[in-house]
Each structure stands twice: as structure tokens, then as C-alpha cells.
Length: 61
Image (tube, rainbow, N blue to C red):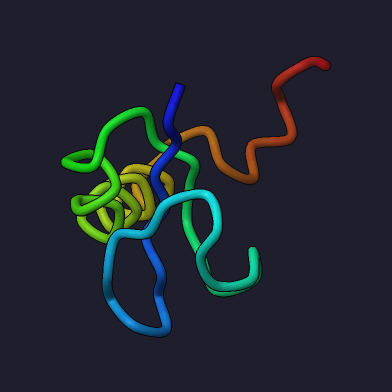
């Protein structure tokens, strides 16, 4: 099974033997998902920035 990564240094999709892990996002199951890695990260950051429960000390562990 192939894995795909998005290299944030070169802004390209790579296979398993690409740039060092520090420069990559992933793994993703498809090339298309890896190509959309920055967009997905931006969406997740937006969700987390607007999470009404972030920093809420009233939640139990």
C-alpha cells in the first residue's frame, strides 16, 4: 500500500522516500489527499481556533 506525503519545503506530493519527516505532512492514503494537505490543515486550525470548549476548565477528564 502506497503512502503519500506533502512536502512543505518544496510544496509537492512525495512518496515514502521523499524529504525528511520534519518537512512533510502525512501520510495520506491518496495523492489527492496529500495535495490538499495545507488546505486541510488550515480548515482544522480554523475549527480549533473557534472551538468553544478550548481552555474550558469545567470539562472533566
